[in-house]
Image (cartoon, rainbow, N blue to C red; front, side, top):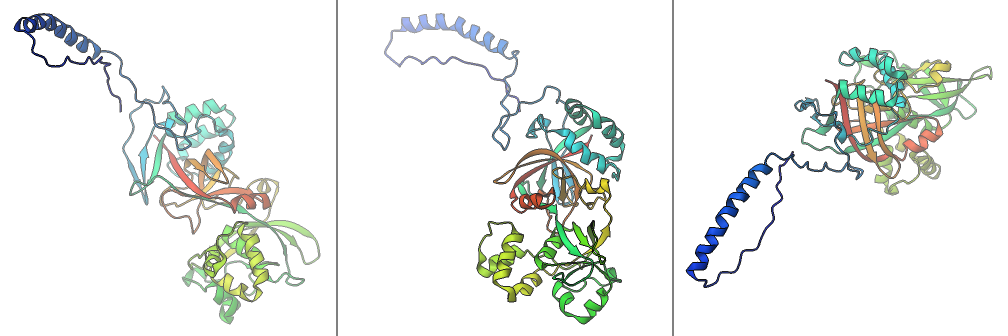
Length: 408
């Protein structure tokens, strides 16, 4: 809002006193012309330039001045499923002037392999601008896109950021020599029986085991590693084949038993373990080594079970992450999983999150989803592939703000 202000000098009035009538008349003669002059000055000041109210500080505490080229009329508020989108100026996006957009452009190019109808018309420009400067990319975004702050339907703009990654695990093509935990392809008729057997029933019921016989992809040595793979939804396997040769393959999400997801760490907390400080796989393995007889109970606390498909890894595939729900390869540090009822796949999103682990102000792409990623201001940040990404992902649990960038 812009306000007009006029600087006014305030003069203290004299105290009331028993002055003579002559003095009162003299005062009126002097003050009437002054009053006329004051009115004239006040009218003249109305034509002076308005004083702009300083913009509010961003969540990081930095005051961002409005861009002089961002003066178009803002559209109305939009409702998108579980969220409402509030139109804002580009100046509200923290870090917009400094982000290395070329990193996000690689993820955007991947989204253009399978664009939705809203963003498909922009993909020609996205490809053309892949070799442009950051300034040119920013100018194009401001010209073609409108930022909207994502809020809940009740107007809450702050949510939760977590993170996930692509594990790399040792595996064997045949069971034995310590490799006893199978990874399965989807069984026949999985979709016709909803929900399918729980994790406990898969481990214990003969009919569930019969349905999965012959569907084994490979075997892992540690059930906690298998659970981690189920939670992440995909990963890479360094597989030892039956003839002793080794190769790396990818296992990607191929289906679920449609049972509810339950948090392993929450279950451990309910057992009196308190809040874990180490990455959950490490701390859970430590607990399992101290409580071997209770490991099945731990695993069965999460009824959800994931089925996989094997994918070969060529040089190009190995340089990218797994395919997300949009059907395109994820990019470490530039892809997020979202609730698709709040943010459609393929949408460019501005993300701001500051916590003990990460300080993020950057452009990302909504390219995936997850069973625990529910709500308007909710995202899962893809950290990348391998143990370092896993260390990072396990520690991210911090406040989040999101802005979708939607075509004008």
